[in-house]
Length: 568
Image (cartoon, rainbow, N blue to C red):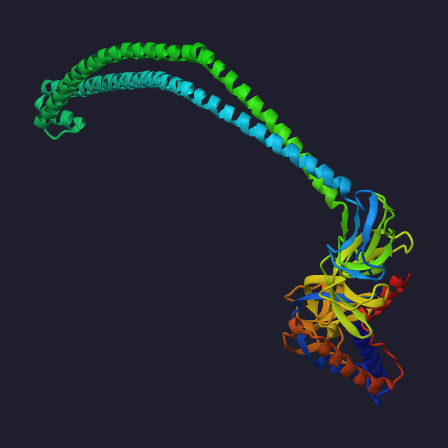
């Protein structure tokens, strides 16, 4: 942030210089100064905030350590009959280190092999007997299966007949109900038409009963134009009533007919249900009695045969286990290197006894070295396993990756232990001191502005906005400062137009002549450096070198802090 602080200091210096000059001007009045200030228009460049991924890397003092050290322990005891290699020799994984007397192990192996052969013969014999029992059982079960299928078919057929009878009953009942409904509808129609015919008959009677001069008035009230059309309508409704009556009689006949069919279908349905119940009973009797006794005999025969096979197989398994143990005991007499590396210690001697469980050889593994360093808790929280890192030794850089982040404080250092591993081969020596650099702060998709746009009033950061041609101060909260600019965590949006260039005349309320460069999204560390250098030159001319400003960046300061933490 110090570049931003520099811009702020220079702005204050320039502003004070101009104010002093204005106050000492010859013959100037306050009113004239006000007029000049109101007419002042400042040329600036502006841009909208952009988006960038920002990060800060820190350097730490670290030490190279061996990734693993392996102690070779024999798994059997006995006399050492041969011994290979000396302390300092390099061995490859699988190399024979020493041997132990194997005479008793060879005898035990021969005995175990004989027991396995005998157990295999027993398994073969019991398996053959079992196969004979299975064929006999299959023949019996086959006959039972045929009977079961016949009974099942009888049950299925009976169920199908029940369903057919149920469908017939439902169809007959539905048809009977249909014609009954149609009869009811016809009865309703007949009553409706009779009422209409009766009403028209009453009007006709009124017409003929009325005097000649009153008849037209009767027709007018009826809705008909003539007595003929009235009488025709009467006759029509009368005929419809008769037709509805005929339909009703016909539907009643149909309903009765299908009602009789439904009764017959219902009787057939009950008969089908009884047949189904009988078929199911016959099937159940077979399942519960006949089948059970037959199966019991088959199962007894098969179980006996299976028991003999299981017993013989168990004996074979036991013999094989003994054989495996005998082979393993023989292998234990040859002790090999579990890893590739350098021998650092040997604790066995030729023709002396080697003890099971005691250290015989110690091998420093060839596995990759690990880089170990320590950081404060706040820094450990921001280091992630998988982050890239760079290890430096004697001016040579080695690519590395963070492999472990400690979650507890190291008791001796009071710091958190971090481990890294170099990528590929390296010539780093165990125990040597190195430097390691890795990301300690990071922000993805951050709202970002140029460093040169940020000013400070004490601890409060702020920027100048172009608000409809007028300079406006906006307080902001800043986060990470990186090569691509300053992260703003609050106070700005992407729509705000910020002033990105320095001007000695820039103050809140002045008029602006702004050119939007849209450069805020593409700020580079070189651009920031050039801005500071140009601003420094202008300040030097005004202040005559009276002010001294540090140009250290935040990342450099944090690096120094992290180094101090790592050194404890």
